[in-house]
Length: 302
Image 1 (cartoon, rainbow, N blue to C red):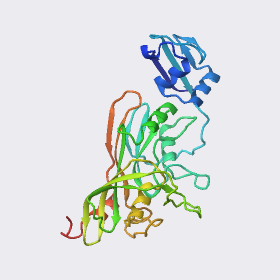
Image 2 (image 1 turned 30 degrees about the vertical axis):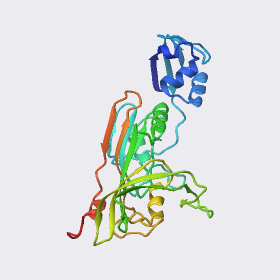
Image 3 (image 1 turned 180 degrees about the vertical axis):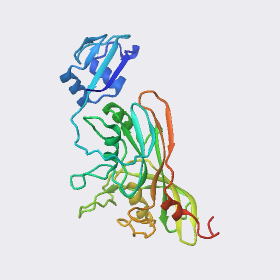
Image 4 (image 1 turned 90 degrees about the vertical axis):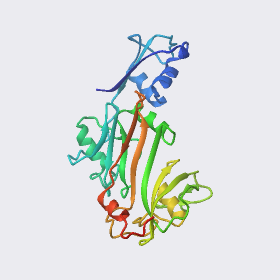
């Protein structure tokens, strides 16, 4: 069963190139995907089977038929799935919290991937998230419906072509109206799920803008834009400046008003459709628990 078929005419800029180079340039196929195409004989030039070493000429039609990979074994769960957008290449969901993005061996059910598997209702099924959210974070998860689409979108992450913005309620009153936390992130020496700021960590940057300050509860509503993508990045960065996300028990303290989650929401995404070039701009509605937390309890907000 073909997962996706790609077809394009060779532009003058690729005249005389090898077919494998043309596949990378035209369709963003990886070396692994090209090796699979070699094995399955899924490559043609002007309708004739071709080797990856073939020389292509301007105007020729290149066609690549990407075969479906092995099923991941994700168990479908026919439960509600909130979709913000879908087309032949993408499926963009609004993930609630607490919910994992992908299942694990110990917890094979209850993840977003299980619901997507039921919605797609096809076998073999491969879940291809472009971004992932922690269990306690709600909001936008972008999923690709083919390996080439996933690769193109991952390459665009943290560029002007793919922008993600989060809303968070943080503990304490953030003094700066806006700024950027630039601090390397790594694993602590003791291991475990936590991450921390450490000099030998991977470079990381998170921009923030103060939207509101709640004087009565001494909390701050922030708009955040990560410039890099590391596990727990926003949570670690806010905790490192003394303003952990409200309800984040791992880096701060739990909040009884946020059972099973913390006050972080993947709110907005702006990306380029990987094959048509169209811009897609979406927002995920704020959950009621988040709205109640960020709602001022007095007239002291400014």
